[in-house]
Image (cartoon, rainbow, N blue to C red):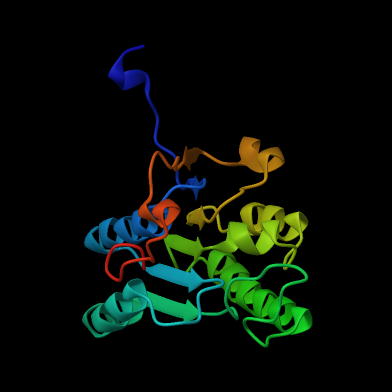
Amino acid sequence: MAFEDFKTKDSVVVVYTGEGKGKTSASVGLLARALGTRWNVAFIQFIKYWGVGEHAFIRDIEPVYGDQLYFYKGGKGFYSAGDLSATNVSEEQHKQAAEETYQEALKAASSGEYQLVICDEINNAVHDGLLEVSKLEELIDKKHPQTSLCLTGRDFPEQLLPKVDIATNMTKIKHHFDDKFLANPGIDY
């Protein structure tokens, strides 16, 4: 096939998933590329409520990009069904926070205001049962035709793969956590 036979799409759905590191980092790289292209970008954060490097970075660049960048941090932390002892957050509170964050994502993705909407850790919220798979499908189906969507987190539902354009599985080969070393700021979060 010759290069002139290729076409462009008005928008794409990108998935970064898998057990390995780099899903959020890849989405922040995509954010930088989109802002550099002068796109309007919404970064919607599921799960991570504590301070992480990407939050500080996005908050630092928000004044530079003004209305071109929207950041929403939702969620109540990582969730494990039946094990709520570490967070003192009920299952209902986790689900409510996931739903509120989802509504922000749906509003941004369907509005036509943004050329890119990043939903970081949404796959985890779906896999953990905080959101139904049907919500993720609705988000993909209802996005504005000119809006690209990036969905990150472990365990993207395989049945939705036909609806995406680019899917990358981050595969762990080695991670120091397996040797009982804690996550490093600036590298792991």
